[in-house]
Image (tube, rainbow, N blue to C red; front, side, top):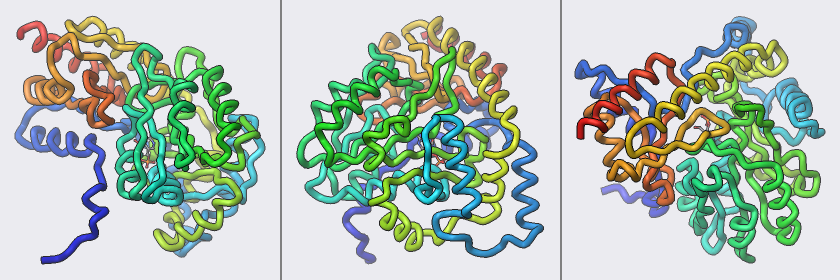
Length: 390
Ligand code: PLP
């Protein structure tokens, strides 16, 4: 038999993809499945961005680009960050990678090894814990609480830092909760981090343009005191409905740039050239489509939060960002997995159990509202019938 490397046994997965597979099988059997499980916009990539990708292919951009991205794309990213966050960014510190995930993978492998500790949100994006374990580092969960709107608490984070802590991962607006951490709490966190200069920070801001009710995004880029150890992750997947293009970026601290550049060269050489040209046009062209998509998400958010709160045994916080609702389902008497399975089998509604995002997600269920208002209403109706009929 083949002998696989031991660390493979520690690699986890993203259960949303498993649920997607089950939902697809049920759909093949002829069931009418409403998918509120997957975390991707249901919109097409705006047409002018698609055209830019096609044009790049026609113009003959078929070769490698520099490993860290086309200079024009890195400049467009820096200008976009400056426009949105009011913070100056050196285009030379921007590294373009195939999606949001590679930055996570590289950052965790850069700091993670046996004996190191890495702090990460729980419930949180499952890939953080998976890759931390893979690296051999010790995962240290930061518990996010419903009563705090799933925001990070500076005190909780700071109290968990030890001399062995290498990396702190934060994510706001957050997957799977939709939680947004208020500025005052981020101010306190950054202030407290001054006492721990050995800790690098990975701020996953992939949902930076999806905030509601007048909330404004607070980027960690806005804190010069931590710039020399901040990795700022963002990208095109969610903002421009480009999950399948595989395009993302991070701003890296100067000391980490040679390491991440070599990781890119060893791993993928460069991102698909046509996608990079499309990425330039996404950032420099009209932004109306972004505003339209965010407005649509906001209308769906109101619908789903109100609908979930009206269901017996459910209680849903008014999520401030991203496109997820994360209701507490304890009042139904079911575990997260039981509720996920019941809703999929009996209602044909795909959701993801809170435990797919860590142990602290027990008692919760993630609903992605990246689906039409009509489908959201139908899903709520079906779940209501099953819950009332039990
Ligand atoms: N970070 C968070 C918090 C996410 O929810 C996701 C996608 O679901 C990503 C990063 C990864 O995005 P990408 O598809 O660009 O790799």
